[in-house]
Length: 124
Image (cartoon, rainbow, N blue to C red; front, side):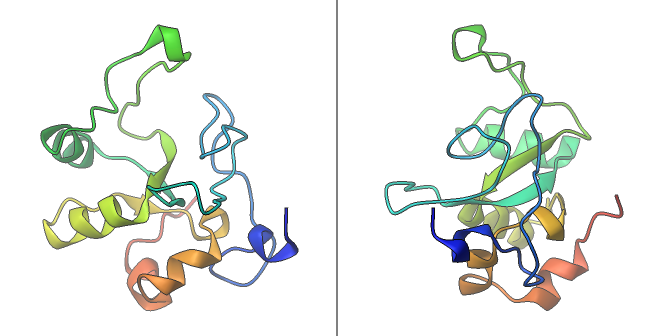
């Protein structure tokens, strides 16, 4: 994996978002991406009930367990690598989950500003 794929939005080493359950495109706990990741799962979020309801209404139910995928379902407070487009959509709708900057991939800065991300920074 290229070295640039290991940096966060702060320009430091990308930290793990969540390993239990494992998140990310590669299900390795990190919000890294490759060209084949059509969702661009690069934003580490701490989800809220408002966000979970919002994304469910948009066709992506993250709350319901899917045992055959080894996915327990998310609850408010869970960390998860989100698609940057869904996060931006939630921000416009006023349903924005918190952001873990240290675990959000630097590629997010191609879609939004650090200032916008800091507005929703999770204090972890």
